[in-house]
Image (tube, rainbow, N blue to C red; front, side):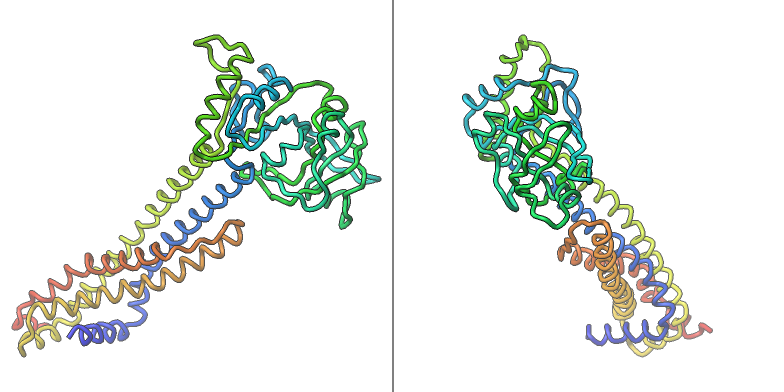
Length: 403
């Protein structure tokens, strides 16, 4: 019985193809917009999380002052850190993988007749562990090179491409400001960071060499602390803050003159913001589903009016009201489900194209597709019920008199 009703509904829809297609557009657009927005939002969230993860695992970033974090963020206003601070943190902090100082300056790297503007970071060998850097070729600094301030450096993929072309840079030489350094390592590429900067446009050299020959001072702008496990982050952060308050002579009740940021909190904040925006965009897109539902109700009311005599004949020869109700209700549901299926295909297609254009992962979620399909059916039920009930309540005699 149900299958016969479905076949009748499909025949009725196919009799007026153009009208049915126009009726479906609202549902198609609504479902496609919701799926595309949610899929792109999910991909964007995954990309942000992955990019921030590239900065290091379970990372704490310590900077002087109370400045906001971001590219170039740091505390020039507050007293910078010193090597003594790093040594004390290393001697007393437990549960950490690596602690690395960092001082950064923008310089022009020169090789032969080629030059390229890049950022030079002064640090030590633990920096590569803290930042999860892998080596494409070469090696990190040795302990002796760090202690003596040797003129050696490790470069990123962008610097290699701009200054060495297709050559292996290991063993080559670069001039940074007034110092010539030997390239001893090439880093695996990381790409663009979540803040929009090129992480591969970098030159890394021993801290003392950087301080003496490039910066001209012994300041340390940042300290990177890689914690051994996520569970220990809060404990290490608390111990770091306590030690730095003592080292920097911050009196009880005074505000810290440094900032310790947990990268997992930053990741959580950014991903939650992205999720909220995705939800809002999805909600706006869902409005068109209601418009599609109104379109279905309108066309079903027209169909009831056009088929009044047919309804009257069916009622006169013994059809029950609930059977007429079921016929028109199934017809509305079939219309909505066809629109839902087309909308799902269009939505994923749009999402794939947008993900490719934006450079974000395409993350198709079957649950979203299933939810959209079910919601399309519910739209058909909700907006098809009133016309179906109107058809079922027609008086057979009045219906047969209808012209």
